[in-house]
View 1: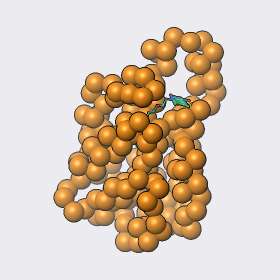
View 2: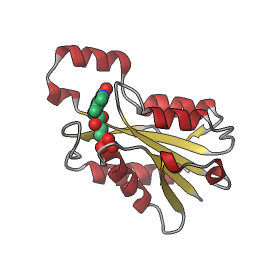
View 3: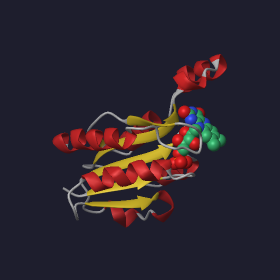
Amino acid sequence: MKTLIIYDSYFGNTEKIATEIYKTFEKDTAKIINAKDFKPEFLKSIDLLIIGSPTRAFRPTEAIVNMIKGIESLENIKVTSFDTRVDIEKVNSKILTFFVKMFGYADKPILKLLVKKGGIPVHESMGFYVEDKEGPLTEGELGRARNWTKEIMKKA
Ligand SMILES: Cc1cc2nc3c(=O)[nH]c(=O)nc-3n(C[C@H](O)[C@H](O)[C@H](O)COP(=O)(O)O)c2cc1C
């Protein structure tokens, strides 16, 4: 099984989660790239595609959205997605809680775009928490990323 992990990251937190996911796969079975380095030929002969983005204004970044929109087809490729986000419970803002409930996070819109391109959803998307907008990652999130990856591996 060949896996490609693509991420975008402003402050490095999503990159850290992506790297942890990458390291959970067996050596030489996975490749990791920043979305800005994506080339369509990277999709040739992969079985699994995992895409991650910071949540920005309740959505994935433009780099991630535009990259996926530019993909011709993901037929026969298993897909899932993740994001990083702040924990709304810790922010304590009624207005933000309202908007988050309305508009959500980046993980699900990414997965929806991937499925629209013909990808086969292999496992539920996931959100990982940062303590503040520039990070750091909340304690335990790297471990959660490893466990999430192991669940994907069982199904892929
Ligand atoms: C302009 C901006 C908008 C953001 N919007 C959201 C949001 O809608 N929901 C959320 O949970 N976090 C939001 N955040 C926090 C980001 O999710 C956080 O910066 C990101 O997870 C950090 O990942 P990175 O280090 O990979 O860039 C926002 C941060 C910035 C700077």
